[in-house]
Amino acid sequence: MKIILHVWRQKDRNAEGKLVRYECPNVSEHMSFLEMLDVLNEDLTAKGDDPVAFEHDCREGICGCCGFVINGVAHGPMPGTTVCQLHMRHFKDGDELYLEPWRAMAFPVLKDLMVDRSAFDRIIAAGGYVSVSTGAPPDGNALPVPKSDAERAMDAAQCIGCGACVAACPNASASLFTSAKVSHLGLLPQGQPERHERALGMVRQMAIEGFGACGNIGECEAVCPKRISIENIARMHRDFLCAAFAERPHVETGGAG
Amino acid sequence: MSVGSAAPSAAGARSADTSKLLSFYHSPVGKKAVMAITGLIGAGFVIAHMLGNLQVFLGPAVMNAYGMKLHESPPLLYGARTVLLIALALHIVAAVQLSRMNAQARPKGYAKWTPAGSSYASRTMRVSGPLLALFIIYHLLHFTSGVAHPNFHYQDALHRVPAPYENVVAGFSNPVVSLVYIAAMIVLMLHIHHGAWSLFQSLGLNHPRYTPALRSLARAASYALLTGNCAIPLAVLAGVVK
Figure (cartoon, rainbow over the protein chains, first blue to last red):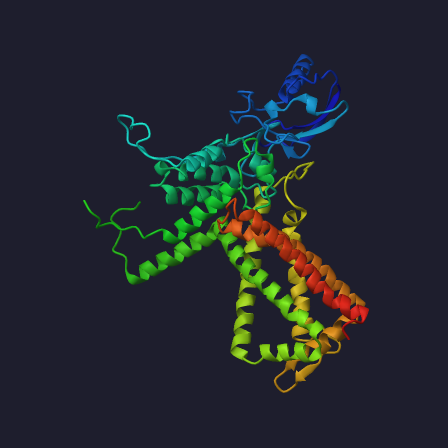
């Protein structure tokens, strides 16, 4: 089948970009979306043109590298699917598709459909971790975890950090990503010692990076390839508000030992 | 953590508390919490306000007695008005600051953007909000102060207690005025439709058992506000209330 693409082409971080029209005449319905772009890129390279830059790695929907906006929906029209797992059988002959990179101040475009997502790394560094003692591993099940907590932590931990939530949010808010990270640690006993600091640190970093505020409209969970729920955002708000009010002044002296 | 700082004096502790409050408000999550609490005050008020106003259907005696009752205790009346105005002001200030921040977060929009899971009401909060602010100004000048009312009556001119029944009938007899009110109530319906459940999410309250009920409750409240409030101008125009 034939697919017409309007692809965002931008030379580098500082260049002005624009949409460029390409025709893909021989698209097989068995191709993944990225394979269609691979074919387009081979044609472009053969003609001596610059291939379209897009990020990809595992191509099985688990690494979080890929993603761009297809016709105004992050990762395209299939719910719960990354772009690499989106197949051309979901499109019809003659479809015109607009491909644009994630758009956010905090995600500067590096080239074409590729953006710099290191803002997410800095949010993780601001609290998305647990401190553990090194040494011998603890006995399995020494620390009891209720099954429902483990399940909800696992649901949140599914976040692959692709950035679709930011792309879909009209405010370019990183709340779904950050809250998934806050939740998957905060729901487990290992995450309790740093729970308040984590919420304060990560929420603060989110604003420093220039992401917007959450308006609870739910576009993020609709496009999330891992179907992370906005219930996690409420948990992050709860942890942040509790932490902001419970935070005690730093005391230099006192305490046992 | 800083080590070896001077022992905190009372003043130092107070300024640390103030800066904590400021850093709480500095955060978008803190601003949203302020919007949620002030929004809850506003939503509670509009529902109570509608229930009070529906007494217009019980006749002039009941309605005007209700108006008189509200003016019985000036400290209570002005206290309530002060709380509402402060809540409104905080709601607007936080909204303006957040909108500015959100606009900066997405400097370049998409050539094509298709909503995938949000309601129309939720996407238009920053349109319905300013429209409601304009309506509130007009509404206060119209039925509260009477400045924008061509035929404003007082039931107790000495204590400046308005006669709500006569003012409502005279005010809504003008179809243009009624139309403005009905349009404003559609905007209010949209704002409450999203706001009345979203505020719980902003405060960190989301639970699979209660959130669907809260969403239904918000929807029900928004439709009730629309029908209840629009019934009054429509009844006046139809001649049912005269």
